[in-house]
Image: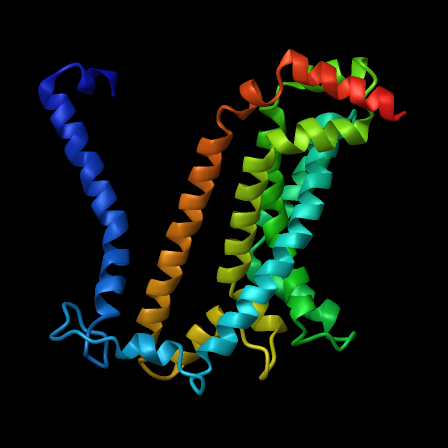
Length: 288
């Protein structure tokens, strides 16, 4: 790679290769977005005409899509809360304590990412079926938490390791309690990472299919299951419209993560100066 960059021809070849890879990755997304505005009921590309009919069908009350969308949003929100609670606890234990067998515990936390989702879905089905919880949004959210929490743990572990522990040690040496250190130093500095973990947990739950398929019922159908059912026996062009909506949602979520990282990039250096840390410990001592 260094040899390619040393010459103009190498730079041109590298740029063309990178452009071709980006086009290859982005082209399916462009096809879906363009097709969602086409008049053809079979989703032909390129479209022969343009219409917003499929987007109107997505939000029609009798179509079933609004109910599936609202259920997926509710399940994803519950999953995000569960995942953040577990991830903050696990990441704090793995980075801020002398936990025995830390590597083994970390591997166990990440194990759901290595096991096929259909296996996890089957295990959850056998767990919740005797308890008569199939079709419950809470059961689906708990199932999604199994997949979303490891991702949140990885993000928060990287975030906590990036925080200068000398700031916490300085506050502790001046009398600040562990709760105050977490509330006034660790968590404010980790806020961008927490937002990123929440966003990725939400997206993981919102797009998950296998667990939702095994745990859903006739009255509780998430959006991915609804999309699968719409394409199982027929070609429904409405799926292209809802796919375009999901793509837009994912792009907005990534923009939010990038914005939070940009806002928090200078926070560790600017949020806690020596005077601020000293004042924090002093206020803690006065309160005691």
